[in-house]
Amino acid sequence: MVLGIALLLLPIALLMSPAAIVAGLFTGALALGIGIAGTATSGRGTIPVLAHKAYDRGLAAGLLFTALAFGAVGEPAALALFATTALAQLLMAVNTRYSAASGP
Image (cartoon, rainbow, N blue to C red; front, side, top):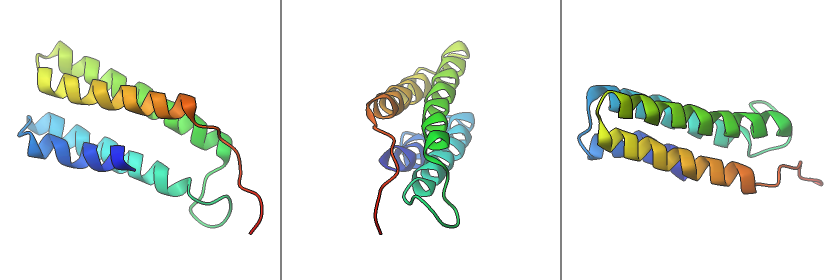
């Protein structure tokens, strides 16, 4: 969830381009949504464990492609921000043991 908050706030705080701000708002909200949906094993607004795993890795890939796109158009600050968050998301996704909690 920290990653989502960082993506929401850092592009604005670092006075990046409007495109970087919009991309940060979108991906930050997406990261927060995925994080919140994965906090319970059942009930309204939750997602299956395997879907959460796929979404986490897909978010990392999307952040990496976003970083590459900003690098291609010559925005080094946005490239650094999105590449760093992609790496952080990928490290979290790879090192997370996805399993459903047991008990009440």
